[in-house]
Length: 351
Ligand code: GTQ
Picture 1 (cartoon, rainbow, N blue to C red):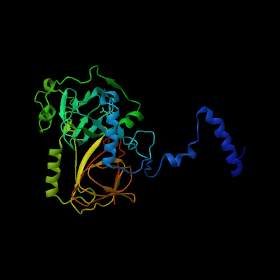
Picture 2: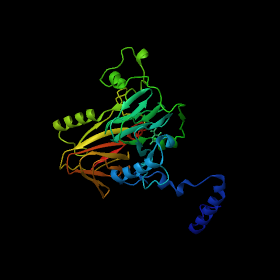
Picture 3: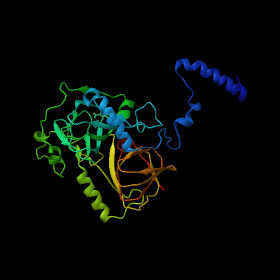
Picture 4: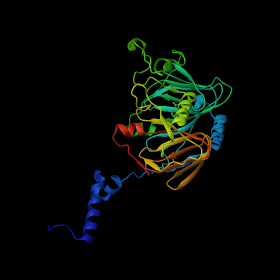
């Protein structure tokens, strides 16, 4: 045959070829290349706001119907409306609101997914991580790194609700999920509360690491109290001029590496003075936010969200975000920036 088929013929012959190849699991790249290798990110995820009050009502109703023990984890998944059926808030990460009622225990298990908790309400229920209990206060950040035993318990008289952030979709992508249950519902308390912070949270470390190393060396700290991060953020805000794109921002770090809190998840807090509006900025990490304090507006690619205390919202990859603070506004956010930076993928653009 001489050269290529004529256009009409070509289409027909290509279709015939595709039809014959498909049963052999072979497909033409040229039909899909532009959708696979895009010039800029195209997130299927959508920006979305979850008001805290109605989410809380649904969660408390679930609390009347199913126990934490029966559910294993009583959580309402915050699924991105653009990612139906995936249990994902952004393609790589999962978010949910977990409730534990007075007297309840969420039984002990461990898994290869790593988790963060950001406390929404309640006083003093605990998460136990590899033998050490951490008593949680609103807006504390608590970690459950990969493969550490954890159970939650509420010995107080009020419900406790927190945001769960896990890398469930990332682990699913890599097909690397392992999980196991401890036989007894709660692990025994083998390490005194606060031990992780005493040993590793004061810019010190055990002098003889080998004998005193109770936690995995690469992940020594799991509690970042609100009282401390708030004091730091406000102190910085009283000294620096606000950054045009962030206001004042501090990232939580893992003291073992100086890097992000966990291998797949990074978390930060930011504070905007009353009346401050940020310039638009976009980044490749889709970020899930909690409004810790204050009121304001988030503008995401032309959509406006009015923010109130404890509301949650998500800004997908490469969606431009502008924040406007009506009052002093404090936000917590977590994303997959930790993983993207390791893979050399992370990019941002400041408008
Ligand atoms: O608390 O261990 O939201 O295993 C999802 C899976 C929480 C947990 C979630 C979990 C947990």
